[in-house]
Figure (cartoon, one colour):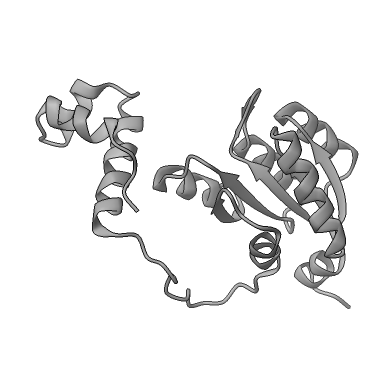
Length: 183
């Protein structure tokens, strides 16, 4: 008899929720060529409707969709099918949302543009007790930037409150927020 995890890995049903139509079509085609039975949705509402029809074994969900947050789809998927494996894709990555995604049941969080091989590897990854060190770890500047962004979001994007909590001059914070994220 198969364990729930083995059954999930054997059943290759996949839901992709993405509002960028061209990326959605390319990814769906690539995942089908890798053996997945793909269902697509272009919004949170469509994704939730697809989940009501049939909960897939796997899901790839964009974080920011026109009608809401992709985390709602991951959360609904885990309620309908606890053994399902879902990942979040985003062009707006930060540590706070990555932590939230994992707490809601996502098995991974990938920055766009992610290719199909990375996505398949994340979906089929075997959970192990020890996490491998990252291939390209974040720089100290990037970690600092991520922390500032997290506090800024927690303060509802209020620059003055964020600067106060970080013990930082408001103008300094504004300059940091105006810059692109360091690599």
